[in-house]
Amino acid sequence: MSNPELTTSLQEISKKLDELATAYRRLKAENQQLKMDAESWQHERQRLLQQNEMARNKIAEMIGRLRHMEPESNE
Image (tube, rainbow, N blue to C red; front, side, top):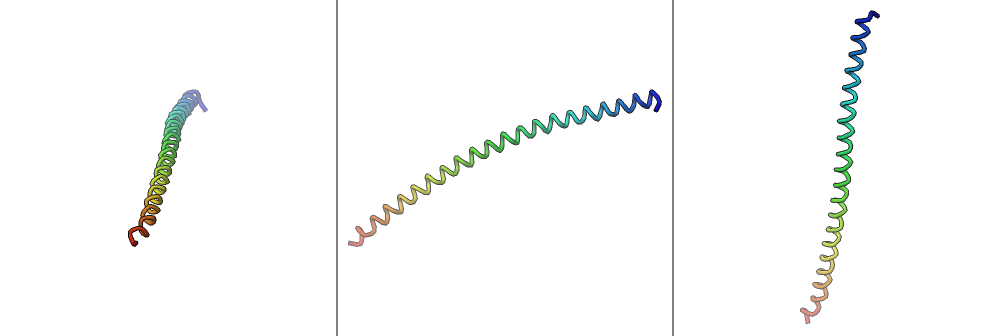
């Protein structure tokens, strides 16, 4: 391999390495964002589960009160 060919080859390798480093940084940032999004969705899911449980308890309580009222209205 002659000196100009070696120089061209090294430039190509350097360019590919720069592209790889750029892709790595982009993917690392994207991965970090996805992890933050996933954590946020987990918190939202937990909040909604708690809200659902509170609603379920209130409904059960209302049904219990309605059942308690039924015998009184039949008398």
